[in-house]
Length: 261
Image 1 (cartoon, rainbow, N blue to C red):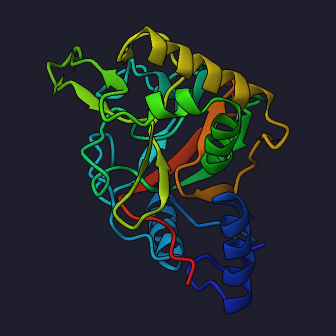
Image 2: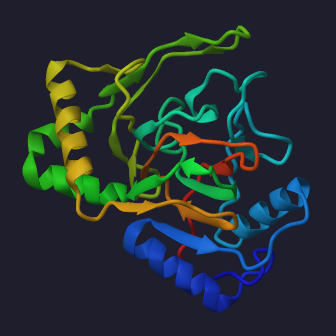
């Protein structure tokens, strides 16, 4: 429990960092709630800043504070993209389609629940380092294939508004410029190209290990709860809104990792 996210105590910081050291993610809950969305943005940035997360990603759907609202959007620039629907999202790490080398990729993230769905919307979480170890111990050749610099390609795309995203290729597992193991991955089947059939088979092997891992964490976040992480594997179940509830999560992504010192 975090008493005030604008001023994280030394004991609260130690407790969250102990989770991060063990699993690359921490789950938290704020005791108090902000008065409005502008205040929520300010609190999110103050909270993440307490953990050294300051190199914010410039995401096209972010507001002026760098915060993205993850909710159902039927119009505007977010409409049509799966995060802004109520559909299931397969296992992934964030920013897999926007990799520009080990020093320019998503390494840290906060996902904060402002409002929960009436039904569904659960997340599953898994430390990407565990996924790496499972694959290394079971199939070293598959791991080698997924570390190739061109292992996974996200093809170019143009949305309905004419915005263009160039082809994006890179490894699944790699070391970032600090030497930390990092992952770039999606389990989706469409709009993903694997380097060759052997690499596609390696990706299938990895997904089977992720799905069967006994350390997968399952949760449904309530308002005021959230995830602070080094861009670990996660997914999302489909969900339903109703007249009284409208699922809304707030996300900020960073190019640096959580500072554990």
